[in-house]
Image (tube, rainbow, N blue to C red):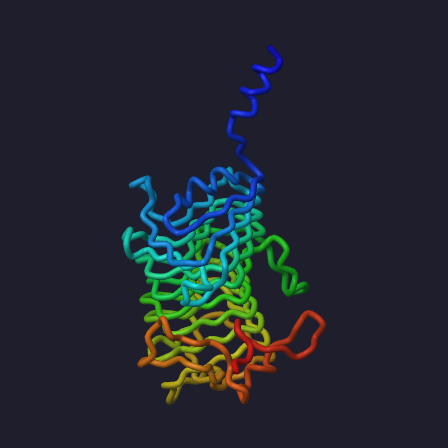
Length: 316
């Protein structure tokens, strides 16, 4: 009898806190559910033309509240499917790349492309979410929020414990805003690049807060707006602002600052990327910095020493 019970127990699938591997063509959502809260999902390199099995799911990846603490680890960002994990929304005509509705989530090493509303959508009340080494290319918006949690104090401006954090990420070539932050959200961007969107590069609303540390904001040939609406705030340190088409704008680097926007130790110069511009296809963009880039020493690390701004550092 005991042997029979043991066989039954071993036959029951175990969910939660597992490491699950995913390859192009696999059911991504099933892998997340198998890994469970606190688990890890490891994505192989390749292009994932995502068409969810659930016709009512409009995201390539949905991290629901019952998946708190999960880690999603891609092979890397960029546009080469041999080395990067690329989630592509075109085949499934998907609205969103990654919807995050849970707290304590880590996501790293992905490229999100061709989602017709946004790359990232952040749910209401989430805390302690970190997205690093991710690119969002050719989506309408880079990211939107529904009201993320997190408190920020001017007396302790570099404490980001419970916030939503983006590190070493690129947001480029979108049709709307690079970052549309709403409903009192607090989001921090550390060593990120923002480039070439139709509407605003940054657009916090209501009482939302955007914090920039060691970032580059390059308008390209389209919008140069940094728009803080209502009682929202943008606070930037050790960052680079540049509009290559500027003529009579008064903002730093020719950018058009609107609303409550504060800068400290920032510069307004061409960051000298390796390869950007209107004639460069989005798959060929290169955000590494040229050897004489002023952005190579524009940032400041946690010890106060100079470091590069933007996500990539110097190119060869």
